[in-house]
Length: 163
Ligand code: ADP
Image (cartoon, rainbow, N blue to C red; front, side, top):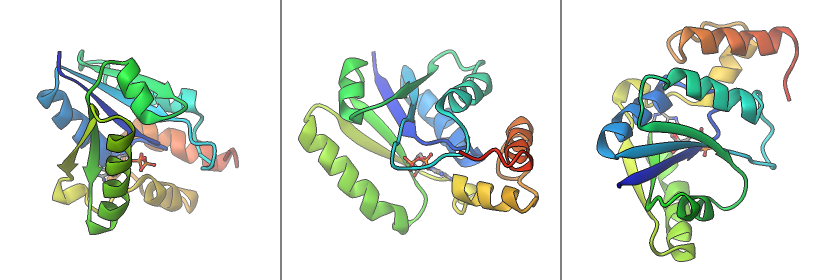
């Protein structure tokens, strides 16, 4: 079985992530979307909220599983019998960081490789941070995220409920 992991913060998940998940789910037998617990990064949504959003979005794709993890990504990959990490590449600005991470992970666990999917042109500008910034000012995020996620995002800012 050809298993891959797509790790990220998904705070919140955007159409860019959704596109990568759909494409990767066609390439691999099973894709685990892993929400990372990043202690150094403050987030808008809790890990549980992000897992729930992703589970609901991909309920109709049986080979997509959602999980959260804390610790080293390569350990999580090995524990789950996944030999491939999938990452999305938007622009050259992503490249240097992604290259370093992929090489580090490969040194840590030689059996784990990273594969990059190039973002669709229409989502190349899109990031979770942009979504949050626009939403915090009440701007229109309907082109960035699905409707239910847009509502949840606005709610966070209405309540001043940021973590
Ligand atoms: P991280 O904090 O690990 O970068 P993100 O949730 O921001 O987590 O991104 C997860 C992965 O999705 C990364 O590989 C990132 O490059 C990719 N990604 C983010 N936005 C897009 C997009 N608009 N199109 C394609 N890939 C994207």
